[in-house]
Image (cartoon, rainbow, N blue to C red; front, side, top):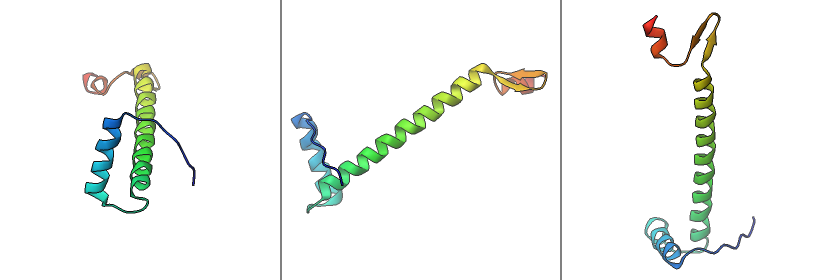
Length: 79
């Protein structure tokens, strides 16, 4: 386990705490559990965004299929 000290706006912290109490209840470790879940979700969103951006860049370059160079699916149907 790691200990991370952060500073957030009071409004954000209070809103987060209220939502943790509503959805996870009260008790030892509930706030840390919710923050860990939020961090994992944020990391996954960043990974998916990076993958999507990489795929978009590849699509913009086009697909090389022998002599055929497609930049979109529409190119398949236009042939």
